[in-house]
Image 1 (cartoon, rainbow, N blue to C red):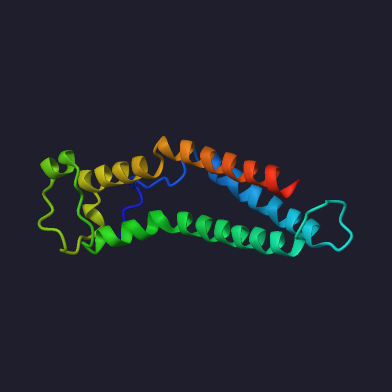
Image 2: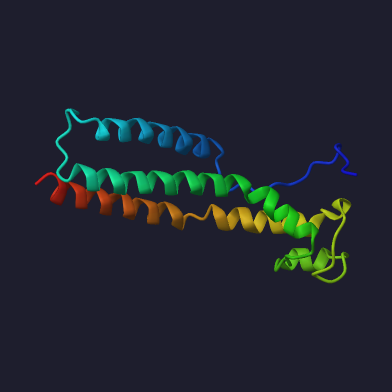
Length: 152
């Protein structure tokens, strides 16, 4: 039985949480833009409209799959932890560990300090500062490519 009075730590794939909602809304706007692109008499002048639309739709599907994957991360890692399939590498968790060997199934009540340290490590890894630089690089790359080759 799960004790509902204890707060269970959860992995935050998007920190801050509003970022996940913003990306979901952006994906919905992308669907609207895809319909405008595919509309036969649209006002946009896009060379190679069919090829552009197919690439755009592939990116949209990848974004939706990514969002679905990120949504399932907390429960998946919790389930893997409880099955004993994960082992924390945190020094703090190893010091506080009283839970036996890895690969040993853990009951729900053993989501203690070791799991909390694991959640913090994974949340920090998912929300690293380097991801913003990488995302910015790809935005500049795509916009630069489109503006120099797509408009000309």
